[in-house]
Image (tube, rainbow, N blue to C red; front, side, top):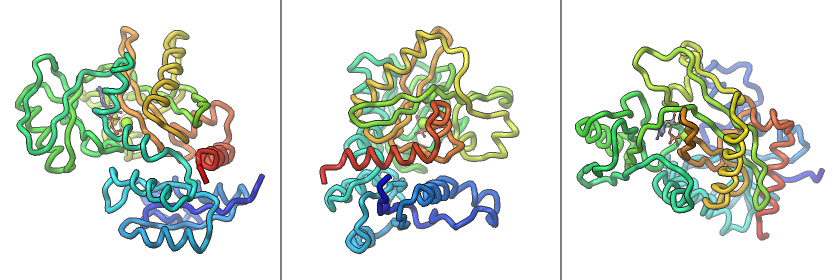
Amino acid sequence: MRRLRVLVLLHPGLVPPDSLDDLPEHQAYEVKTEFHVVRTLRQLGHDVRVLGVQWELLPIRQTVEQFDPHIVFNLLEEFHSLTEFDQHVVSYLDLLQVPHTGCNARGMTIARDKALSKKIAAYHRIRVPHFAAFPRRRAVRRPRDLAFPLIVKSQTEEASVGISQASVVRSDEELVERVAFIHEKVKTDAIAEEYIEGRELYVGAIGNERVTVLPTWELLFENLAPGAVAIATSRVKHNPRYQEERGIYQQQATHLPDEIQARLTRTTRRLYKLLHLTGYARIDYRLRADGELFFLEANPNPEIAPEEEFASAAAAAGIKYKDLLQKILTLGLRASRW
Ligand SMILES: Nc1ncnc2c1ncn2[C@@H]1O[C@H](COP(=O)(O)OP(=O)(O)O)[C@@H](O)[C@H]1O
Ligand SMILES: [Mg+2]
C-alpha cells in the first residue's frame, strides 16, 4: 500500500490526544471518532497531520502548501460554528485542487436540505413522509392535508439538534410553538413531517460510481418512559448514560423479510445516485408495521467511530476498520480530478 500524506481536517476542539486513557469519560466520548481515525491512519502507515480549523481558511491553504498532502481526510462538520458551512470547506478544497475523502460539495448541499432531498426522492417515487417547510420570518400555516401527529425539525441541522420529545406535535398550537422554537433556538428554517411510527433503520453505503450497500442497522428502544415516542433525540444519540437507562441500543436489524431487505438495498442505491452522494453515506428510514418504507434523510460523511452504526455495519459485512478507512481514502483519490 502506498504511504500517503494525509491531512486530517477537524474542529479545533476535537484534536485528539495520543491516548484516551487519561480523559474523563465524556471528553473521551467526544473525541472518539477523531482519535480512532487518526490512530488507524497512522497504523496503516500513512504520514498523518492533524489540523483544527473553524474561523480561518488561511491555515488550510498554508498547510496544503507546506505539507502537500495527497489527500485531506475530512472530519470537519462545521465552519464558523455553522453546520451548513461544511460543504463550503469542501468547495474550498476543490478550489485548492486537493483531493478529499467523503462526499462532494454538491451532494452535501442536496442531502443537507431535508425538504429538497425528500422532493427529489418523491419525484422518483421513493416514499417520504408528507411534509411542509416553514421558513423563518413567515407565518406558520399548516397545509390542510398534513395530518397530526407531526414531527418538527430543523430543515438543515444534523445530529438531532433541536429534537426532543416536544418535537412531536398534535395540534396547530403546538406546531406554531415548536416551529418558533426551531427558528429562534436552532436559528434555521423548520420542516414538519408526518410522524411515522415504525422501526428505525439505517443503511450505510460506500462508493462513488459503484456503490457497496452495508447490512441494515436498527436503533432499538427497550425501556422508554411511559408516553414517550421512540425517536432519536439528541439525548438518545449522545448520552451513553441515558442510553443505558432507557435500553437504547443499535444492532444489525433482525427479522427483516427478504423483500424488505431487497427494497432497502435497492432504494439506498438509488438515493445515493439521485442525491449525488459520493464517498460514504448513511440513509435513515422508518419501516411501518404494514411494510411501507419511508425515506427520512441522507447523511453524507456519517459518524465513523468504530462502535457506531456505520463502522459496525461495515464490520458485519467483513470490512475491518482499517480497511474501511483505506477504502475511504482510495475513493477520495479516485473521485479527484487532480
Ligand atoms: N417523519 C418522521 N417520523 C418519525 N420519526 C422521525 C421522523 N423524522 C425524524 N424522526 C426521528 O427523529 C430522528 C432525527 O431526525 P432526522 O431527520 O434524522 O434528523 P438528524 O439530521 O438530526 O438526524 C430520526 O432518527 C427519527 O428517530
Ligand atoms: Mg438522522
